[in-house]
Amino acid sequence: MYTIKRAAELTGISVATLRAWERRYGVVSPQRSDGGYRLYGPEDVRALAIMNSLVNEGWSAREAAAETLRRLSGRDTAGRESSFGREARDGRDSRQGRGSRVAPLRPGARYQSEDAEAFVRAAERLDTASATAVLDARFALGTFEHVVDDWLMPTLKLVGEEWAHGRLTVAGEHLVSYAVQRRLAAAYEAASGRVDGPTILIGLPPGSRHELGLLAFAVAARRAGFATVYVGADLPAEDWVRAIEARRAAGMVMAVPRDIDITAAQDIIDTVARTHPEVVIGLGGSQQNEISGRCVHLGHSITVAVGEMTRRLRIPA
Image: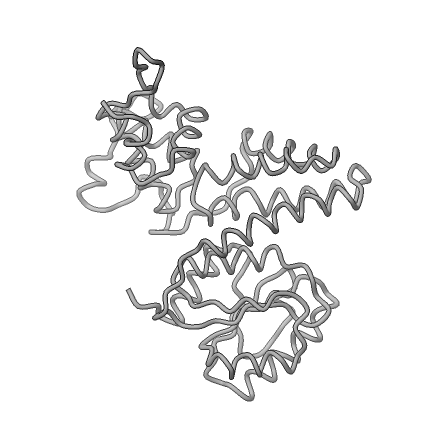
């Protein structure tokens, strides 16, 4: 039998994640010692290892938990024999249409909606502690990339809608936005960069300050092995070229979040493409498709965006 700390070490997850998976999804049922401490058996460790592997392969925590329980029981939810054994031998995934790494975005499930509503209520009450607690709980449930794609970005959209409808004040919207910014900034600092990874410049065009999505991308890019140079919001056009030259950047990623950002962004893209045609230019943000020229539209998933930049810049293994 293993203590919770040892079970977490054996399966490569944190104690907080282990507790969250146990509480929310019931993938393990530990015994209790005479002193009341959790004790995990070999089957519990196996379940946690399976679930962690699935989450790392791109499954959401909810789907990974369901698949883990199916694999351990040997049956699917309808009572039929699972095809896991065949899939393990030939490498196929049990869900048709799933790519090898990137899962499709899914509509919010009930537990996601509850957490999103709790986050909105924290904004409504100007309750920083509650907003932080919701973020802590959500980021304990899966990889950074999939929590951002599947929960954080849709929840921030909901916050904006509730502000537009009058439920939230500007102060409430700012409070939770700053809570998210602090969390992303801490994740960026904690992400391990690789000195041998290609350098990419990451920022916003002049006048643009909506940087939460871009900062989330920067965290994911750093986690993927890029040497990131995060220059943030409101970078003047001439400074993009200077920064590329100063850091000898192989690529750049710029978000275009608003229609009023299009003209400045287009000017920057045209200038960089003319002066440094070797630089791979990636674009994100809601208005990215309005930009033309020699650039790559990265879409609206940080998982997909980092994967596309990785493919084009060939991060060494």
